[in-house]
Image (tube, rainbow over all chains, first blue to last red; front, top):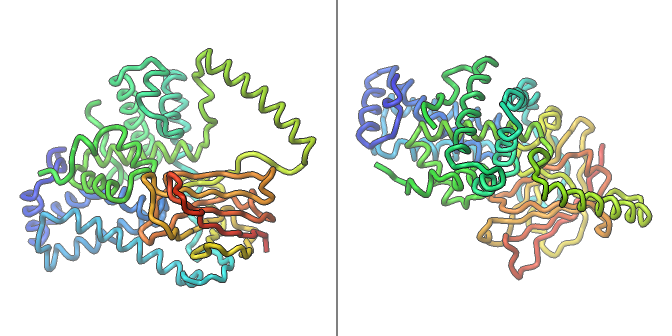
Amino acid sequence: MSTDEVGVQTDDSNKVLCSRIRAGDTDAESMLVKRLLSGLRLVAHRASGGDLELSNDVCQEALVILLRRLRTTGLDDPAGLEAFAAQTVRNLVIAARRKNQRQRTAPDSEALEGVPDPRPPVPAEEASGRLGVLVKRLLAELPGDRDRAILTRFYLHEDDKSEICRDLNLTDLGFNQVLFRARNRLRQLLVQAGVDKYDLPDSETGS
Amino acid sequence: MSHSSEPEVTDAATVAAYLANRLDPRRAEAFEDYCLRHPDFARQVELDLMLKTGLKQLQMPRKTPFLNARWRAGLGIAAALAVIAACGLLFVSRSQSGTLIAYRSASEVPAQLLGGTRLSATLIRLRGDSAVRRILAPRAAGVLGVRVAPDVKPGRLGYRVGIALEPRVIGRSVTLDSLHPDADGYLEVYLPLAEVADHTLDVTVSSAPADQEEPLSFRLQVAYQ
């Protein structure tokens, strides 16, 4: 699949894609999932307040709902495919939250009591901070302290890019190149760690 | 076709603000809409999110590498002042003092705290109520999620949540700014249970920047079962 096939969306491409899925084209289904997955994970991540476990569950469920809909009745307005998918994710997060609240305590109860979250603990692999381990490896591989400082200040301390460039005497391009290399290396490390390539963001082809 | 204003959405400052959850809900949704229509850009943002999450899991010390000479000198003076202040406090009280640790989202919570039973408390509509609510935590729980329903409109930077361990004079405290409610309208922050157990917490919620309104406040006593 070329990058162009999953690149910028147009209303026309949505219409064609929806028609192909309704006609039973499984390649079109794969293409749809690849197009939407990263964006939906971002939607779910924010809607769930950063709950990785819930985000992943909700994205899978949303894609199942979307594909079932496209295989059967389709969408009245294929141009609204992305908005429909995003709203499905948000609704599923709300539903999951409400379900959890019902199981924990009445949401409008003023009598507060401690109730363990009924959700199972985060799977051990995820809870072990696998991303942290990979990022630690990535940091160790960086050629110098400057690159580590850039990543730490930008991502962890949320310092402004211009402030970092000024402090470290960096050009805009130099800053972008450090981030570009870090993203691609993280992606390689994730693949090596056994994360399904299909489930990962593509590598960048330029900075 | 572009449904969002591209230059605004894709600039580094907007991406950083989105990842830090500092965009207001309308702009955050516009950003997500753009991501859904531009999958390559979404993948880049997702890798940024992974890097950010991984770094938070490592909880690296702030700005220790790469300090220039002026910063080092300033840091030296600050450290000396901190030592003097700490010594002074030791004479005044043996209570713990300093910044309390709190996390803005579940993704920021260190993995070792998430492994056990999860505990969550929901606080709503308690303006003017000074009663202490009590929460009993299982020993296996590592983190306490505190969900608060704000009752005022958000400010330009969303909401501010302050958490202080009583007594407040030399107690420990933390303030989280630029918080935005989840889809249900709740703000949620996470506290390491070991830090707050056997204490009474004073939780305040206000818009950010603060307006003239008295902050919504709660008192929450945390103890192990």
